[in-house]
Every structure is written in structure tokens, then in C-alpha cells.
Length: 341
Image 1 (cartoon, rainbow, N blue to C red):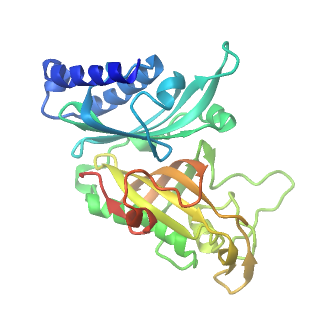
Image 2 (image 1 turned 90 degrees about the horizontal axis):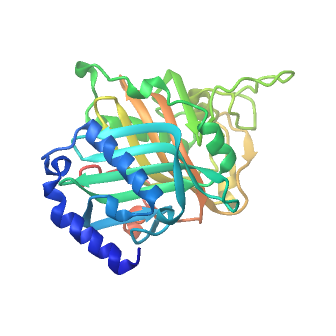
């Protein structure tokens, strides 16, 4: 579809949207929001934006770049995968999604598996914002596709125990602040059962390989995925992630106790590679050249503790902005609740 045809299709959808029963509804509950994700993915597969009810001023970013509707993944997506994890914020009309998808392959008989981190904002029955990260790592995507989301993510928090939106952000953001400060002495609200998944790979509590000895987080000079969430942070060995910025808290699922943020992890190199452990040992570690992780990360928070963490992340140019912030906001390490904006 050419650009003129696309604009006409969007205008027609906007004008006719109120005639559709699903679009005429005043609100959009959990099922409605998750339905928008499925319809969006189907529209991507069809390479046809006219299949979606889009707001006239819809904004779309992919991997931090603002694109025209119909560009980027709209041109190449072939199918959905099996992994599907939703975070729904009915109050804000926002929905997050982590899942597996497939794109075109050089061999027409094959597809290339990817991981997607997606956010949609639904306003008046139409999608007004689309933000997505596409992780093009076949091995990770293939592995994630064999998994099922942790059941804890669909468990509702008892009504009397639900945290406020502000408290959910405050608790989850201590993960970012604690990692950035990296003094081993911070306020780390990790539950005993805390686990972290990154692009489908377990990043905590991994079993010790046969014939090896589990590294001691109090004496090791090398960070380990065998450690618990708490042990990793108390080790003080994450200093090379020296700035965690543009912390945009975008989806807050109060019923299930899940907070979703988009952010950037900077590795500045140089002097940031030289630091001391909590007990005063000198360490030199981390990337030599500056680069950044771009990520979407969600946290299951309950009773003031972080129980699960899951991230979709990819390497991006150093200092990359999100496409949703001013320069000052993009460089700031202060958390921002933008869910209701």
C-alpha cells in the first residue's frame, strides 16, 4: 500500500470507527486490550495497517526510531510465535506484550524467529501509540518459543494487598537505582523467590555446571548468573552499567501487580570500568567501548517485594533516545510515570 492509500485507510477507519461495537465502548477491559495486541499482530502479518483502528495522530516507534505506519516490521513480519505474556493497565488504556514472532528469511521456505517487546495505547477505541523493540536473535527467540510465561504473572494479587501505582513504581525502580549505584549496600527489595529472565534466558539461580564450584558472591571478582537476585546486587560487580536512564514506567497492572518500563542501560567505558567491591577490592570489568542496552523490563511486585523480572533487550547505539522523551528526559536517571499521559 502506498502512502496516500495508507492515509486514506487511516482516515476511513477513524471516521467509521464508532460504528464498530468494540470501538464504540467507552472503556477497554483486560480482554479488550489483549485483543488489540492480537489484532495488531495480525495486521503486521498482513502488512496492512487498514486492518487496525488507528487514531489520526498515531505515533509509532520501532527500536527507538519513529517510523511511518506501514514501515519497519510492518513490511517483514510473517507469523506469531508461541510465547505470549501480557501486562494490561485498564485504568490507563495501555497494554504491554512480550512474545515471539517470525520475519521473512532469505530462504522463502523458512522464517526467522524474533522476540518482540510491545506497548500499545488505546484511546477512544483506537490505537494512539505503538512502541516496540524487535530483538533479532534467532537462538534466543527459538529458546523463548519453547517456554511458557511464569504462572505468577497471571496470578491476581488479593484486593486488600494491592499496591498503589506509585508504590509499584517505587519498589520496581529500586532495581534500576540499585544496579546503577552498585555499592552492594542499597535497598534491594528482592523476595526470596526472585528470578530474572532476559530474552528467554535465565539470568539468576542457574545451576552450577558439573565439575565446577559455585562462585562465592562475597569473594568472586566475576559476576555470575548462578547467584540469586540479592546476591548479584550485594556483590557490587555490576558497576559497568553506570547509568540507567529514560526510565519510563508505561504500564501498571494493579490487579496482577506487574509494572512495565522501557529504559536504557549505558556502559560508558573508560573510568567506569574501574571500581571497588563493597569490601574494598579493586576491580576492572565491563565493556571497553561505550554502548547501550535498549530494553523493556517488567516486574512482578507484591507485598513490597520483587518476585519476578523479565526483560526484552538488545544492543543499541550509545546514548540512544527512546523517541518518546526530550533530550533532558532521555539522559535523566529519574523514573517517570507516563502511563496516564
